[in-house]
Length: 595
Image (cartoon, rainbow, N blue to C red; front, top):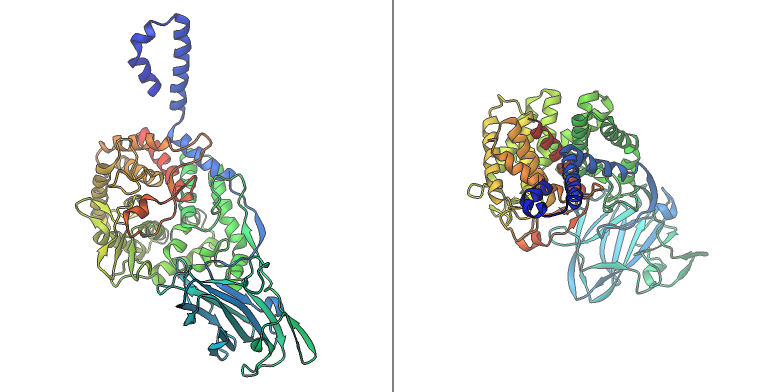
């Protein structure tokens, strides 16, 4: 359309040109117009989806397991065999830049003694092992929380265990009072083995015996090797596991995660690709999602073993088995639920059922049933969790006919609105802190996007006679009013919605496009909002390259303490956190333009 405008605006100048030059200019401008017209919303959505499919590799590769999140895992079984009886030691150094006291999470089922700087600081008899459990991002529950005094520099830590049971392993992590990794404290072998890269521990064993009170040579002094009862013992590195991980092509625009992993963003993205397949009638899109789900089904037993037995807390598909938050359970399962609804494949339901049980019965809630998280402070409500839960619950209700799923979905929308929705701005705050009864600082763009996407799903799938339907429709309309008020003149929305000095953000803009286009088409809002949707869509397409790469998607974002945190948040090309929304926006705009 811009080319056509130029012809009109510059007609006096064009009349002065020679006929030959005029023909050349007209041909170029008509080509520009035809190119713009050819890029229908479905064409744009297909470009994005096709790139995802090109860059998705249904391959696994062997990689060595490395320490993650500061969690020290020493598994003596790999060095000395499972069920071996005897005494083994592990040695490392805790580095601190000052004299201080520090907290440590510790789990072990064996008889164990721990010395810090030659002083006995912990001892326990045999007990059942409870492996660390991740309760929210990067926070774990341990069997014990220990407080030790550290001196500036290197602090020698020696751990003695007796291998008289199968789980001959210990877990140790320096933590903050909140339970996060304490990055001021490091484990290292540098004082005694500076040339060993990547290893934090040495192991030695197996000495004969089964009594912690019997002092053996490593407790008396450190030497490179020992002679004990006619045998030689020497230090070795713990043998690492080899893990199977999803392969990410070197040529992919996005390298941080695989598009095929179990992830809330990938769940939304796969759901969007299914919608694109339905809209275009092209089987390749539905076939791709089918292949994705079947790939998970084929390998789930192995990855469950890898997570539970190898303690691959950041391995491929770890979220499917971590199962401690809505990010792990509701949104990632959306394509699985959609496929079950279409195929009635009982194997799919066997995977869906425990996820549904978690969302209904295990996910942390406020006393009134509102979903919340234990971070950054206990019982915090995140606007993001409307999308992480509501579309999943709605589809379970549609599939089963059980009203408890519809009721829970409706309750979340109503309660989240009561706690997070600002009646003056008519926007959602990113979070609400239960302990202080206050909202977080920002109207973050994507949090509002997740919210209105989830609410529009409720207006589609919730029975019209549901007692909360009209209330939810009014919530949707109120948020639309707030959103169009802060829409930039370019058509985009900003990272922090009411701060135009924050950058234009792609994922939230796509979410608002799909919600507006859907609302106008369904008659939930007035037709005048079509102009807002069209303007936003035209701006959004400028963020999409010819090869389908989507630019300007904000990375995953926790609740920030100040606006600067949101202003400085990095963006990544083709981050899945925005791809599903871009594809659905194209599908919804296509339907709107046909109406």
